[in-house]
Amino acid sequence: MRFSHQRELIKKVVHSTNSHPTADWIYAQVRSASPKISLGTIYRNLKQLTEEGFIRTIYDGNVARYDWNINSHHHLKCMECGDLIDIQLSNEDMTKSIRKEFDFEVSDVEITLLGKCNKHN
Amino acid sequence: MRFSHQRELIKKVVHSTNSHPTADWIYAQVRSASPKISLGTIYRNLKQLTEEGFIRTIYDGNVARYDWNINSHHHLKCMECGDLIDIQLSNEDMTKSIRKEFDFEVSDVEITLLGKCNKHN
DNA sequence: CTAGTAATAGGAATAATTACTGTTTATTTT
DNA sequence: AAAATAAACAGTAATTATTCCTATTACTAG
Image (cartoon, rainbow over all chains, first blue to last red):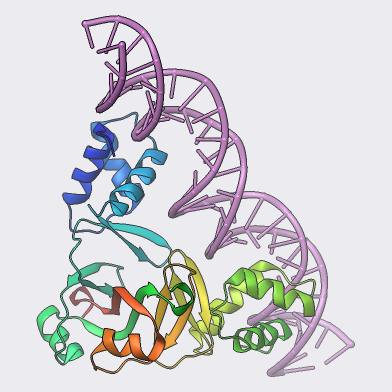
């Protein structure tokens, strides 16, 4: 992957926030520094940065969000305002400790384990 | 919610498969029984059925899929073929027991806990 | 049976994302 | 450092998934 100013900017923007931004938000930010950049460039580079492990793509409903935190961690998603809050899970009494630590009332859990199924050995 | 033939059909189709179908697939199926149905009707009813708790909506990347199984359960998602496999999680040695039971090699875990954050008390 | 309301079909509109094309730019080779 | 080459770019068109809108149809209560 060769150097590009645009990609550096995009990386910097993703790393600048804890808000799990969408491509559109990133686009707006990057544009203020580099007004000619196109949305295609944003998407292309976000995908590339994800593949190279510099950032992480998370799917929130049906929009992609991007996260600078590449360590294994999870999210609390507020169903009222849509906020995503970072969380590190240990096997404690989850719901209870989450209520205490985050003042967050869990009502549903979505878990997907990614990997390879037995068709690919 | 008053009775509708279309909605019954849609419900029946979702309940007929373990493949976590998309709106489009459901559309194709329902069409063969009721050719005049429109995609809008599919979406409207899938949303309604979800709200009334007859089915469950799950997000797979950025497409919605629908699941007749409304009990709390989770999914193994194969990164090669995209298959979603139902799984019931207990707090065992997850990855290990999944390898054994499902012959599925977990490489990443996505967890989102849905609920209300402290801005809504 | 008829008015009022929920649900529908069909199509237009929107939003998110990807694909294509000709041009620019970073790196490699001279 | 100039020329060659291949990746990355801007701009735009295309695609895909989903929602919205409107006129019509079909239940249901009186």
